[in-house]
Amino acid sequence: MTDLELVRDLSEEQLLARFVPLLPTAASTIVGPGDDAAVVSAPDGRFVVSTDVLVEDRHFIRAWSTGYDVGWRAAMQNLADCAAMGSRATSLVVSLVIPGDLEVSWVTDLARGLADACGAHGAAVVGGDLSGGQMIVVAVTVHGDLAGRPPVLRSGAQPGDTVALAGVLGRSAAGLALLGAAVADPDPTLVAAFLRPDPPLEAGVRAGVAGASAMLDISDGLLRDAGRIARASGVTIDLLDPADSVPGDLAALSEAAGRLGIDPLTWVLTGGEDHGMLATFPAGVELPAGFRVIGSVRELGASSTARVTVAGAEPPVTGPGWDHFAG
Ligand SMILES: [Mg+2]
Image (cartoon, rainbow, N blue to C red):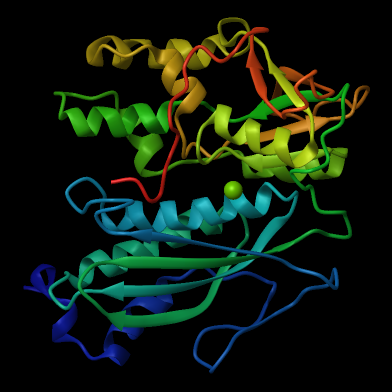
């Protein structure tokens, strides 16, 4: 019965022979999997690099996420970090820790999730490592190409800039909450937003091309991540009232919020892991496709503390966002 085949039934070579052919390829790869290391072209003379790890029972549980979901999400959160620098991802290396009693099909599903997430964006998986362990760990390192442009940092926001967002707010957090509450027939769009986030990566590249002054992807919630730009840039960020600037995001959450007795504004302001692109643009720059205005940048206030306001006041909710070291 192939569907009950376990990782421990195969040698490492046999497992790799199932896994590697499923991985995405790209023209930028000069030497792919199979040698001691890969070789990837970097015509820019520089490359962007970032890494992110998913740990079973901390970032995902097998009861909710398939191997495909975990592969997709591991790729996408790395691709989003690349896009948030204004770069396009070219290659990823993936290290896997897997228990021997894991089904082989889970691992090949993970490869398919990696392939589908990367393939649409022209990125390849060029190598990695495999090890046994007590739980599943997926560690991905991504490399990106700036195509001659300056990287978009968090520290470049200037008073007078426009704050703009590409992507959705709060859906991943809502999906996670629905799964956690085990509600019957949860909104599939919200659940999918958590399991397989699909951030607007090309919008990040367009922002870099258009001359965005600062950018990051929203991984820990709008308030926290806007606060990171504010601190790095030494500015105040004034967000518009979400009811005016992102009414569609609030509306998309309203049914789930009602079922769980939660204010959808909480998810919009503090929900992480949607990986939308939060950027600032100098006044007069035409916003690239996919971006909408959600606020503005001004100088530090009298207290000289970088901060974020919502509708001209202190934020109405102060969710913790995502804390990696909390319980
Ligand atoms: Mg990021």
